[in-house]
Structure formats: structure tokens, C-alpha cells
Length: 439
Image (cartoon, helix red, strand yellow):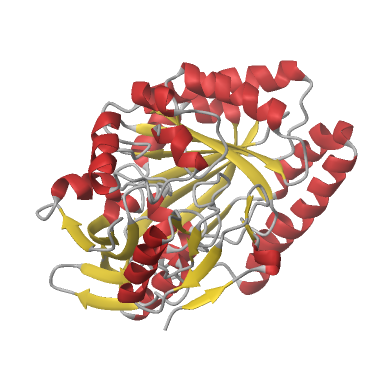
């Protein structure tokens, strides 16, 4: 039987502390039938319904004052088909659990993002991605989906079955129904060699096309107020496995990237004038290193320092120009930015509202330490990103609306028409969807 639960004072909050909601009730269904029943009951009561994953979106994409579905009990692997190279997993399964379970089975996703705390349905619905020359977002690795639609019925889709729903629902923003299971393409587990090294920003930008072309996965972090970056290249390797040593791993990933970084953020928040000096030190703290391990141990890393983030997808050919404009703006502004700017890429995909839909893409993510005023920086950055027809990450801070999206997504009308068909009464509506999709 599904249980109805409520948080402290019945309030739900997201990870970044940017969103709070007070749903009329919270439900934890233990089966797909119970989830469908909860949707039908919400309709009877005239309430809207939203499902929430682990709350890693900075936007209010999952917030509701109606019925909040928490899928913690809908977890685990349903089926592995080695011949087809697929795994079917319940929607509430955290990526971390999926990655570890797949590794035990000698399998892996082809690409993933840089954290794995999110649920599979939350990550894919908002377009979560890593970096890749040839391999795209987590949603682009989906082979099939199952979702409960507004009338409480179960709909399955794939390239062959309900293909128009499949095109949209892989990154569906929770607007088309509540995902209950996802079938991912997987492959036999492999090794990646990561090469991390500092490089000047001028060097990275002048060689960007070459660095992108030569590596399966290339990304870099630029430290504002400096001309320094940290680069990371991940490429498949024949081995042998050479994981980061425990002590070195603790020192780099926990002590420097989380512990000392946290203290530096506190210092910068308390005395903004110290930020440029701290940035110089931070950008030189991590030394070059190379290690070889299974994919999720290379792609993902712990992120314990809380922050607020905006990320935009721009056409890949516009990356260097966009970044130069951002640097010029920061240099002239008097802003004090203590968090590095993250740059990644993705190939074009065929998902209706994927940030990489129909175009080769570069991502630029700007962050601010939680509790630091971020509006001025994000507003300035957003102005630059939108001038390049940028598409914001659906789960990160932005101010765009349906009118803007209709201009930067050629298939926007296709998505809204499908939503009209699947959810005519707007059972899955909330303020965020009203803004980004129109009412």
C-alpha cells in the first residue's frame, strides 16, 4: 500500500535550497498501480500532481501545491537483456545505485554526468548530461520509457511504439506524465583513462577544436579572475586499472575539492575582496594526475560544497566567443566570482526539448556559493548566453519563458501539441511549466 508522507511542516525543499513547496499531500507509491491510483485520486480531488526525484534541480520544475509523488519505493533493476544491450530500471532508482548494480553485472552506461545522486527519471527529464564528442546525454541513451499519463493509464514508448511520445518524453520536464520505468542502452564495462592537468585559458580556447576532436570526453574549468583552467580528458583504455590511490584520492577529491574549497568559499563570501587572490590559489591547487578506472568512477565525483548554478547550451562553434565575452564581462564588472566556470560538450541528438536537440553543443555553467548573491552575475551571463541563442538547462537557474523557447527550439510546437493531447487538463502543470511551456 502506498504511504502518504510529509516533510517537516509538510514542506519540501530542493538540494540547493532555492525552492520550497508545500504540497497538499505527499505520496510514496510502492507499485505502478498505486502510482496510477494516486494520479486518478488527484484528478477526483481537483489537484495537480508532480513527481520529485532527489531535488537536484535548482528550478521549481518539480514543485507543487497539489500531490507530490516521491518514487523512493519504485527502485531497482527490472530486467537486463544482454543480447539487446539494455537494462530496464524503475524510475526512482538513484543513478549511483544503477551504476554500481551495472558494474557488478559487468555493464556500464556509455556516458554520464559528473554527479550520481539524482534519480534516473529526474536526471533524464531535465536533460542531465556529461561531456562527450560522440556520446550524448543520459536521456539520449534511453531505448524505451513507461509513463502514467493524466488519466491514470500506462503508456509505453520507444522508437517503434508511440515514437512521437518517445521523441519528447525522454526529456519531458514532467509535463507529459509520470515516468515509472526507463530502458537504457548499456554496453560491456570498459576502462577510462582520465588525464587531468592545468592549462592556460588562452591555450584551451585557441586549441579547443583540436582538444575536442582528439578526446572522447573533454571538459575544463576556468577560474574567473585568473587566466587558468583545469582540463580533464577521458578516453577508453586497454588498461591496466590504475585507480586514484586512497590517500591521493582523499586529498584531491575530499580535502582540496570539497574541504579546503568549502573554507575558501566561506572566506570569499565573508570578504569578497579576497576572492581574486583565493581564485589564483584554487586554480593552482590541483596538480596534474592520470588514472584508469571503470566509467562511473571516472565520470562522477562527490560534490559536497552547496552552490547555485546556471548552465546554458550554445552552438559548439560559438563556445570560444561566448566564453571570451563572459571573461570580459567579469573582468570589467567588479563582480567577485569564487566558483569555477565549467565547460562541456555534446553531439546533436533527436530529443525534442534536449538542450542539444538538432545541434552540436557546448555547455557553459556558472556557479555561485550558496548564500552569496548571484543575481548580478547570472543576469550578466544570461545576457551573453541568450545573444548566442543559448538554451538553458531545464533544472538550473534561468529566466526564460515559452516565447523564448519557441525561438530556440525548432520543434517546440511539437512538444506543446503532444502535451495538449496527453494532458489536456494540465494535471501535471505547475508555475514553472506554465512559464516555460505556456499555459
